[in-house]
Image 1 (cartoon, rainbow, N blue to C red):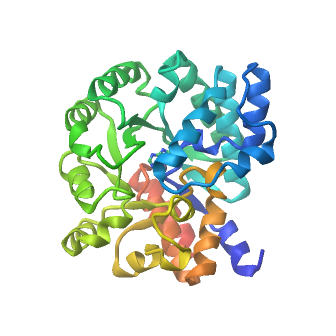
Image 2: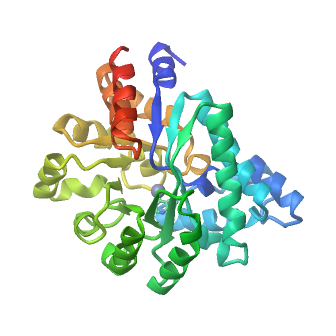
Length: 333
Ligand code: ADE
Ligand code: ZN
């Protein structure tokens, strides 16, 4: 690590786009497979890592859903979440708003309660023991039907004290946000905030749909907004946050090379972009690795790094007073 890399690691940061199932490192996958007597289609951690070559989002999702099968008990969900939070602590990520995909688990017979209770217990322990605050986001899988999303929303209602928002993830192309307008309306009426993946592989029009139909607080990814200049102007005017995931975008071939990534260009144009890790166990790193990859390729100034960190707190679901505290702290750097 050079001095700037060290600065990026120590910079207080918030992470707003990270799938807990995507933080399952091969070592833990192996350990949980043994604990739960599950046979993996790989015979070593190295073989798992070697399989992580993707040419698009669907390639990745196929492996990601298969990996999640090792998660069976409440303790497994606790261990998964805790391992992520320890990484956050080491990288000075002090506020997190992670996603989880209940349908990935309920579809294979794991109870909703098992999933949420394990995750929630780890998040609460992290607040106490690591000083990391959190808000949890439940995502609907968009490749599954609207009826399945409605059933999932129903299951979440008793746990509203543990879930702040709903999101939309999985295969994007061919599954536009408009398919989920009704379930998002119901979620908002129940008191959930909303976010959605849009403009990762899918067109800029999906970003417009997420804004207008799903009434999202943030767009997850959103990098394809540049294909519609009027949309970019709109995102700037309303200061709509985009939770950008640089290493993910390279691994899934959204951009060919980090030198072509548009995150700093969007930042300079006044779009409220943040940097996030998406699925860190699959894409080559956590928050610091994402900041470092951008800084090395583009390059990034210290002022830009601070602005990105400031955006991450401002775009969070923390209260205005909490956001102001973080901004004050960052401006002293
Ligand atoms: N689920 C996990 N990671 C995802 C991504 N990058 N896009 C859509 N769904 C996902
Ligand atoms: Zn994502």
